[in-house]
Image 1 (cartoon, rainbow, N blue to C red):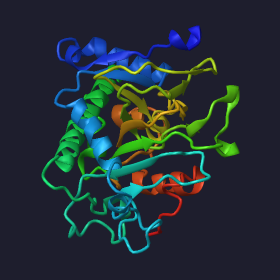
Image 2 (image 1 turned 120 degrees about the horizontal axis):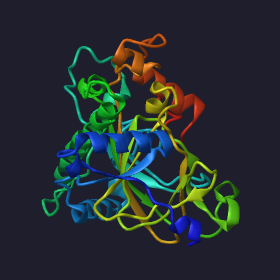
Image 3 (image 1 turned 180 degrees about the vertical axis):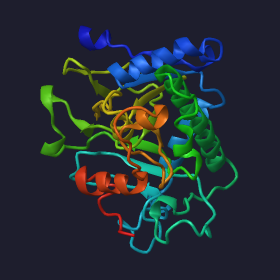
Length: 332
């Protein structure tokens, strides 16, 4: 590792410290989001990280048939799920990863949700034999990370000098958050040309900004994550046991007029099976993510216009960024 990379450190946001010195930690959050867009979050309590790792190895150790029973309709036409569930490694793509994802289910008979709105399709789950509580562990982690994400947003609001709960309404009514466990198998043989980058490195996820609002990521002990710093250089944050890496996405940055940074990042092939757990914190489908959010919060500034999260996100991931997981999703 180069000296430059070794010296790269992300700011650390301590949620326990925030309970006794909220203003100081709030200022740290705003500073980190204005200048880096990435940070560590310490003291998210209640998560058993060994069990979380076991969830990864348990699921991706299932038979091919078991995983494919949860595969999205695009890859298995007889399946009904188009958004949640399992997606496989796609040969020839520079993204070399497979994943399982779920959301917080809503009442399937909710009359306010448009038929076919796949953001709210029911999650699908693997069969369990009672020896390992896969679903229970992940659902518990979801709620913990949901609350921790709100805690960070409330600190950001305090640091911005607006009401502490200014961001809450965006997430209050049926958030479409996606919780994913991921496996990055190393490249077998010669990788495709579109996976090769500078210095002989190979990507398993090309450089990108997240499209969502905020991401909490647990990388266990694995390296591979690289962040594009303000000086235009790629740097690798050290894995920090028990701590989540947090970054914000395009939605949050756009709402703040670019004041908060959605920072480009990528994942490099490290030559071994790699696992990570991202929690993509997202508003409700109808959540207002319109620009000039501070005008809405303060009553002063350029006009704020209401814009719904769901339609904006569909445009981003299907038609602009064309992520392979999403570009095949049906219209509704």
